[in-house]
Image (cartoon, rainbow, N blue to C red):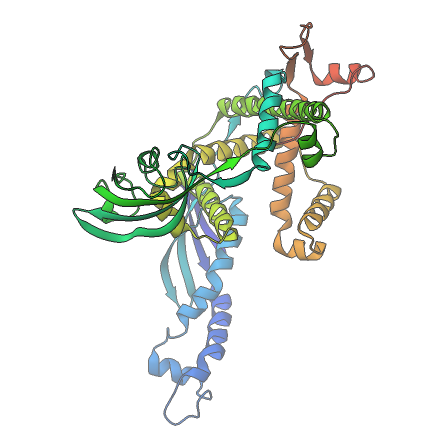
Length: 460
């Protein structure tokens, strides 16, 4: 392989001209001949025994060129990328420029990772405020326990309300004609769940068991089924049953049934403690999110669109995997929600942009601060993954390349570096007696460690 030219043709795009010489190409052509000779019939020769020269004379000199080129160009491209010290972020555009007995040449247009600048990533200032736990918060937690331990009872003395579980028959019509997928019998529908298109569930509220009525709705303009977009529809609906959740009384007996505590007071105290722990974690998350927002604001780069699109692809694939684990596929989900795939991709756009920008910023910080992944770091991370997935370490290594793992470790270390060097002002919860705000820096935290332990910080 010979990299004959390396030219930047526009921002984040490089054009490489790559040549594979005659000796290497001849070996690949010979291998292609051996691979294909058994499939070629030549008069006068037993199948698989025809000499290469006879086949080439019969079918043309380049009969094996395509297989030879396909065998060689991927590695030639990888070698050229390494020689040019480029970091691609998308598949290359390949254009074969010449091929003959002396070898072949091709052009590769490569989209590469952008140049990044990050300023003021040390000493990021932020405030940590932990929300106080109120009696109302504890009441809400008790209510959640009541709802989880409630029992479903049939409603016979009132009309359907928001939050009720109903069983309905329905059939939809557009311009008086029933449409495919618009019919269901004894369909379970929780009112207020927004499972159906906008306006449907609200029109069931107020009806009693046995009622038959029309529901008038309009399909959204971005509805998945092209023939229903923006169309007015009438659904013939019958309410077969209305059910609701009956809650148990919140008392000492209830506390004994749902926990290890003997009294409601003890249960409430435990719920208060856990709520406080959640508030502490939430406050820490908010601190880290502020740091991330600041990093992104202080980062400058012309980011190729393909980096955002590939991150969105990752989110879509992950979402589809989770749907499959629940016995559903993407097409069915889109049908139920009335969304199109393009619309769903847009919901991931902001998240994808944030993650791509954050990673680029952290990679730059790691470079500026000479942050690296040690052999011990790599071994520990492989072991952590093996334990998490209950797999052999060697199996994990075969699935996750060391280079990719190193990059992830370095990024995690970089965000730890940013957090350790941040200046965080801690504010007391509003319900507590106000205290003088304390600013925590890395050096001050170390000096004060004998008096007050520093809260553990976790990378996002």
